[in-house]
Amino acid sequence: MGIIGKAVENAAKSLLKDAAIAASVEAVEKAGKKTKPMRDAFGNAVDKTLKDREIRHQQMEEEYLAGLRGNICLFIQVTGYSGDLFCITDYNGRIKYCVKGSYGRRSGKATLQLMDVNKAIIASVKKVFLSLRAPVIHEFRPGDYEIKTYGGRTVTLKTKMTSNRERYYVEPYGWVVAKDNLMGGEYTLIDRGYKVAHISRRRGYEKPTYILSFQNGQLELMALMIMLTVICREDYLPGNFS
Image 1: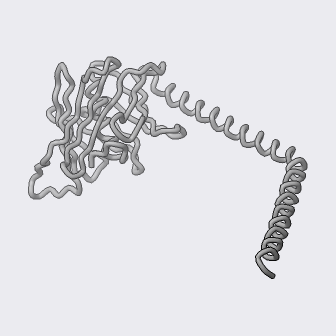
Image 2 (image 1 turned 120 degrees about the vertical axis):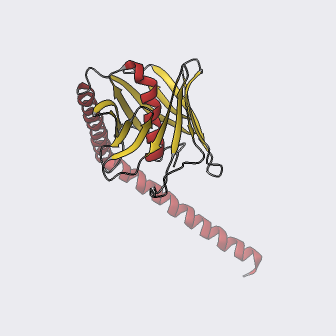
Image 3 (image 1 turned 180 degrees about the vertical axis):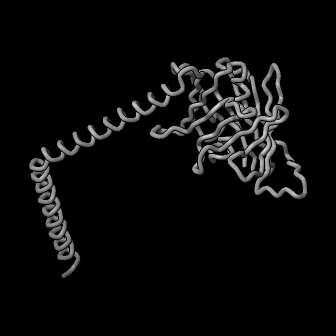
């Protein structure tokens, strides 16, 4: 056939290929014109479904908040997976605090720092490097966390091995943190049977989102830091403290 003959053959194949592609494109365009009403109808149905879901989600959240009437509520949302961990807003969406943190898996060091809108550190959590327990107590992953609110209270949050739903003990107050369901995401801070604070992980948000509720405004920082420590450890969020 020779070089020229081979070139002609390749050119012919290329022309046939181009013609086939052109025919396919034309067929797709024609089919597209015929199916456009169907696609539009499907798109409208999807939009309506998403809108209905948003409305139902908003109604559920409004009903949940209505049940918390008389409480102070803070909204806690995960913001990232390095450095900045949480953004915390009030009921009206105003930013009150941000949280920075780190967890060194090799060193065992873990910290949280709560900052106000001026970036001043007003509370912190630090994992105690060595968690001592009595020899008869064998916890799977014990942990002690020193919590400070600047101005200034200091407490220690300790994991607690128990057969019931109590998971943590707060020294020296004698408070306990109870897990409210098997799946996690719901915890209550209790002082001798009295509910100090409650945190709930809410569904339907783009990022992990919690609502913290409490009645005593003087305990805001302490309740917030205790619950942040619990959800970081229990819910495997950024800065996980396990």
